[in-house]
Amino acid sequence: MGRIIEALVACAPRGLMVKELAQLLYLSPGCISQTVQGLVLEGLVVREPSEKDRRAVSIRMTDKGMERYQYHHDKINGILDHLLRDVSAEDRATFERVLAIALEEGKKLRAAQAQGAGK
Image (cartoon, rainbow, N blue to C red; front, top):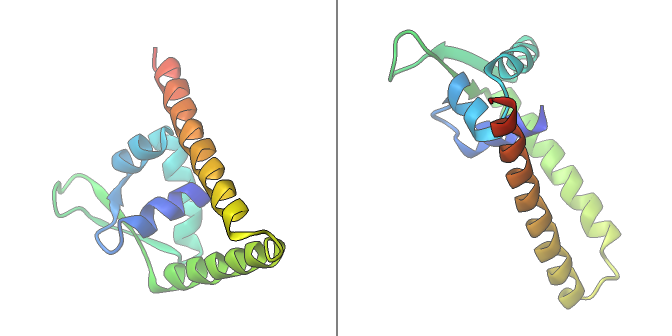
């Protein structure tokens, strides 16, 4: 669910179509639809007719969803700041670089898995 929220926040305020979200996150449209339904029921996202294609639906964060995202984002950053308070700036920069590399490798792995599942 977190990756869907991150993608929607990155594309706010225009939103994304289910197919775009699925391709971006290397997940099936069915998986995206099920997760989005839960977010709709919580009032965190809305489904709207797409401006590009009348047959498609665009998913967009609501104000409530953005507020909840910001709250959790700030909370996590506060925890990280606390945990890393005694780490030097140089070591913290190294940690952030390693984390960025690990995240990028994770994206590549998900993409390869998604391609393998499609065969």
